[in-house]
Length: 234
Image 1 (tube, rainbow, N blue to C red):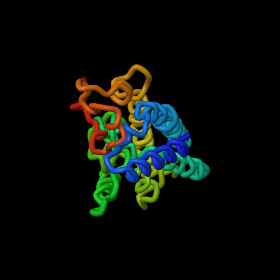
Image 2: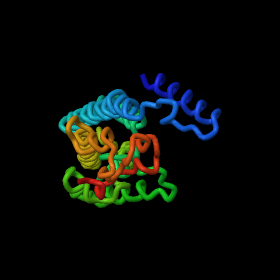
Image 3: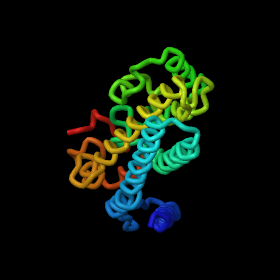
Image 4: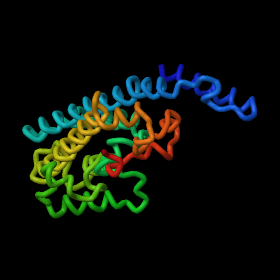
C-alpha cells in the first residue's frame, strides 16, 4: 500500500513539473486519502509493533533479573535487536506524540558524538545509582541515560553483564529492566496519541484554518509543518 502511495506521489509530482503553473490540487491529488492511508497502514502499525517489541524486551529482562544466568544472554540480545529494528521503522516520524515530552530523543539519543550516554551509563554503574533502577526515576534523568543506546552500552559494559549472577550484574540488570520499562511506557504513550479519536488523528486528518499544525491537506506532506509538539495541543 505504501509503495502504491509512493508511485502516486511520484506520478503527481511528475505531472506538476511537466506542466508549468500546475500543482497537486490541479492534477487531482488526494491529500486526505493519502494522509489516512499513511496513518492506517504505516503510523499505527509501526507504533503497534514497537509497543509489542518493547513489551517483549521488558518481559525478557524482568525474567533475567529474577533468575540471573548466562542462559538469558541470547534472549536479551535478541529482544533488544527486535526492539531496535521496530524503532528504526518509525524513527523517521519526527512529529506528533513522538516528540511530545521529548520521547524520540529519550528513546534514541543519537548521534552521540561526545559519547555522553556512555559516560553517564558508566557513572551510574560505578555509583550503583538507585534512581536508575526504577522507570519513574529514570525518566527524569538525561535522555542519554534512558534509551536504546544506553541499554546497548549497559549490555557490553565491563562492570557487570545484566544476566550475570553477581552484585554488579544484578544492579546492571535492574537498570536495564528500568530502561525497558521506560521504553515500553513511551511506546504505549505514542501509540495512544495516534489512536482513533485522539488529538493527533484529528490534526492529521482534518486540516483547517483552526488546526494548529495543518491548514490544508497538503500540509501532511510538508515536513516543516509536521513537527508537532505539546505547544500545538488544543
